[in-house]
Structure formats: C-alpha cells, structure tokens
Amino acid sequence: MSLAMNIVTYPIGFIIATYGGCLIMKQVLGSYKKPAEELGGFESAGRIIGLFERAIVVILVFNNAYSALGLIISAKSITQVYRLKNSETAEYFLIGTLSSVAFAIMVGEITKYVSKLTKMLL
Image (tube, rainbow, N blue to C red; front, top):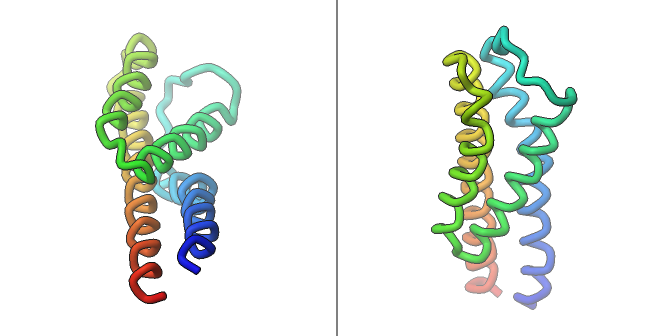
C-alpha cells in the first residue's frame, strides 16, 4: 500500500512544485516593479526556465542530493552574470531565482514528509 501512495504522492509533489510554482512566482514577482532594462530573449523564457529549474530542484530534493542544488544555482548565475549589469535587473533576477528554488525545496520536503507519514500510518 505504501508503494501505491508513493506512486501518487511524488508525482503530485512534482506537479505542485513545477506548475504551482509558476503561479506562486507570478504572485511574488508581480509585487515588484519589472526592471526597466529588458533582458532580451523571448517573452516566456523566464517562465520556462523557472519551470525546468523547479523540476530539477524538486527531483534533487526527492533524491536527497542537496549538494547538487548549489551547482544549479551557481550555473544559472554564471550564465547570467554578463547580462546583469543593472542592479535593478540583478535584484529582480535574484528574487525570482531564490524564491523559485525555495518553493521547490519546500514542496519537495513536504512531499517527502507526507510520504514518510503515509508509510507510518498504513
């Protein structure tokens, strides 16, 4: 029975972390003024990058690979360092990245806790 619950629990946590994160990030970043300097790229690139970022982070949390999380954040920061000359843009980018990663970690940890709890109760 616990295997059946894991088959349900982890995909639900994954969906909440990835797609639910889009809604949460829209609320978080919506309260901040978008930087005057456009970052370029296509319009929904940030949303798609965030979706993949949260997917990778939550999978790493499910597998207890916390050291790899630093690698993800560092790689994303390194790729953007030349584009973030404006401090306003850098702050907006940092708020988005850190809140997105924090949300994915939180959902991943809650999902693991729910999975352990269902194993204990069933």
